[in-house]
Image (cartoon, rainbow, N blue to C red; front, side, top):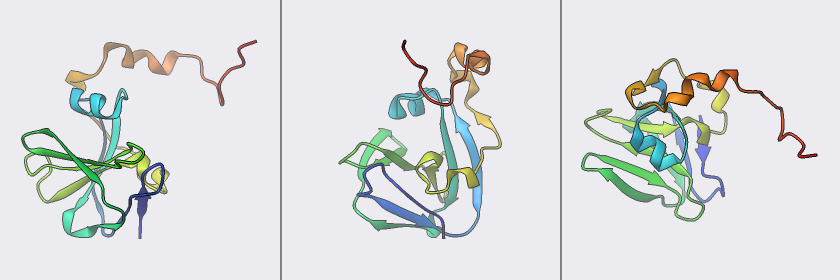
Length: 133
């Protein structure tokens, strides 16, 4: 059964069944809540999702969106919105114990993407931080 957790391990979750969708969202809400240019998400049926350990904190980022996170380490974990994904829990893919098993198949909310995101692929790439010497 797939599992995931926050950075400190205080909140652990699991799900069963299939994934409804897998995407990278570029909306301003996701950017600001995660402090990232985009956030990868998978959606699973709410009935297939369970908290195994801990008690996540809740932040209502808009009238119809509840975002859950660890109040100890601050890791964003999942959100629930009957308007965005009825009957689903949307999990931040990077919090999964095996995120490589759930690659995104699309980008969404590109109207909100930062302009410079389009050129990120052209930047120099390093396996680790480059030396400062």
